[in-house]
Figure 1 (cartoon, rainbow, N blue to C red):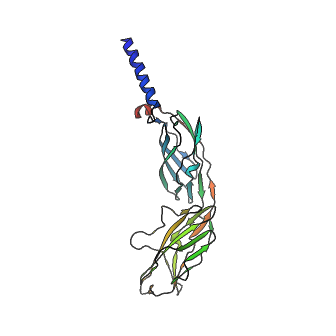
Figure 2 (cartoon, rainbow, N blue to C red):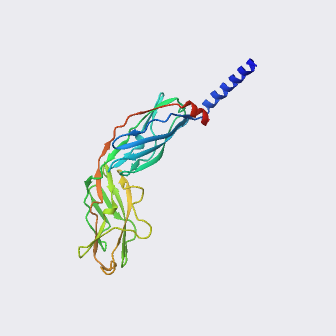
Figure 3 (cartoon, one colour):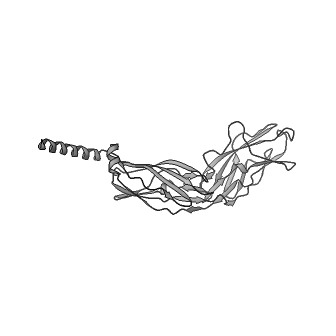
Length: 276
């Protein structure tokens, strides 16, 4: 019986060792405490590694009135045999909002490690009160197709619609600076010859900037559809002389780094055994 038990133990150990060498074998790590600062909270959930990647879900909560940006490629996975960075898009967290994203790193086949360190580099604040770029008014009927102010350039990007009660002007705006641009389309107004102003609105489905936020990084562009409604008893927009006033639509802000402590991850033996 003892001989049989010993044989069984040896066989089980061999199977376990084989599983550990399998590319699909997953190492799970103990949950670390939420990282909390005045600016942000960071939760890391479900951290695990297979041979060819490490992956976890991250919840980032912005506690400020400004934007928070994670330049994902600056996160640093520090393993005993090397350092690795994810390859992913920047993450933008609006003021007082949270986002949930999956972070993954690859580029090797040796990620099945019992411990590693994550350096939380790449977190920045971007002030909503940046340097204003004052764009000249866009006159309607259109007298030019392009406008420029500082590091911002906008041009007509489709058909201009002028109807009795609705005017719609599609733009594409680009940013050529070295910092971060904020485009706040809600600032737009249409100004009549009488001096009356009407804010941008929507026509049918919600009109907004293309994408999920108002942030532009160097070299990027975004579409704006400026839609205005004025009651017919005020003016017939089809024939009226008007101009779009950009107000404080365009601002630039610096990236201000947020210092955060490195996170050390250790294997969770029970979860690792249970998941494999």
